[in-house]
Image (cartoon, rainbow, N blue to C red; front, top):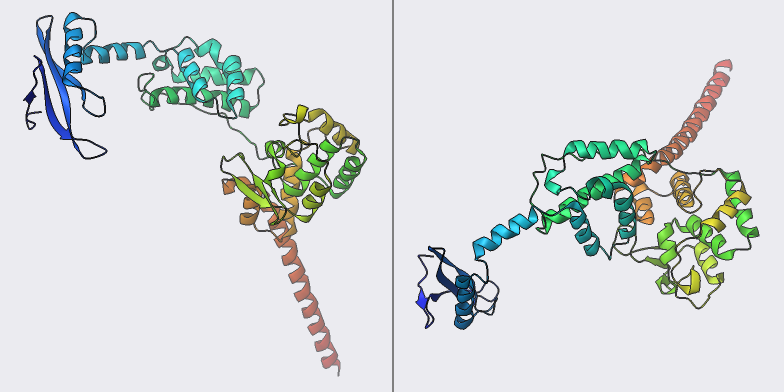
Length: 386
């Protein structure tokens, strides 16, 4: 502070320097106080004129409280804060994380994972005491319980997110990232459900015969548009742009609102779909947002005789994508946009279907050339005989 001129005030031990305000660039006063505590001279900042609304009288009052021991010095506050941080358990970090994430759609799943997988072993631990061995034990324990690799991964990911949230907000000491290794289980989630032409025909017949038109039309919309389960449940009539031919996806999986084409099959279905007075196209109880339709969908699946592991809505999203990819008329970039995949890697699972189509097209070309060659050979034989 030697380069700044000190200006004394009428209050003992209170002075200020002049500096530029960070936002406005205007000159403002920064007040400091000097006092003795336990025989030691302490000099520290009291506050800024504009940002902290500090005045000479307030600075003097603050100085008096520090001298009397009614308030800690800045250094003592930092030490106390650091001590408090070192007492922060994972349970307290989780509570802060949970409170901050209330607007996230996945917060209910996080609550279940914390209660079921993490609280018992990590709730009383300090984040700085967690070791890679603890994480390995968690992965082993969840795997031994028979949980799917994806479920195990979500448990470990939640643990990592809680720690990172605490560090970013200064709720716990910073942890050296090289000290912890969050090894994730290997996941093979590239399962692509598909149906044969005969199975699709059987499904369409079961949908037509189903008395539950809400469930039936949900399945048809998944097949016609490839929309996700959550997108169908959140779909409102106001999201349908019949004039321009688009469906607006609000709060989709990727987080950014998007739109997909309203094709003729989906348009006809929606135009004939019953309006109940609810803003939702497929409303739940009392006209609110639907949260489930599992029982009715399984009934239709069984009527159609589909495989036991076929997922009625998500599986039809795969069928939609597979049909477009195998048609040879839709490139993978366009398919990615239709499926609203953020990452092209997700769409690559359908690449082999397009490759099969290209190979069939190449075979047709080969057969054509062979026919031409056979015809030329036949003409040569005729000429030679002559």
